[in-house]
Image 1 (cartoon, one colour):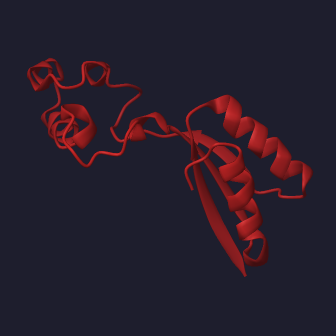
Image 2: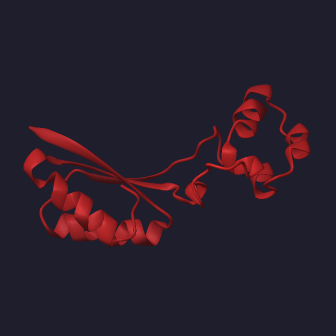
Length: 113
C-alpha cells in the first residue's frame, strides 16, 4: 500500500535539500511544485496586506473575492502567522510503512507537514 506525504516549505532551497535526501534514501516518486491560494502567477495586491481598498486594482471579480476572504490579507485574528509563505510543496508517494520517515525528514528540514 502507498501513501502520499505533502510537505510545505518556505523556500525552494530547503525543499530541494529534503528532496535530495529522500532520493538518496531510495524514494523515487518525489516532486516539488510552487503553490498559491490564488490563480495566476502572482497577486501583487497581496504585498499590501491590510489594505482592502487595493482590491479594486485586481480586474477579475472572482479573484477579488478570493483575496478578500483570506484572513492573512486583512490581518484578521486566527490567521496562521506567515502561512502564506509556505508556497513550495514537496509531494512524496511512498510505501505506507515509510511515510512517517518522510514526515520526520520533512519536518527536520523546516516543512509544515
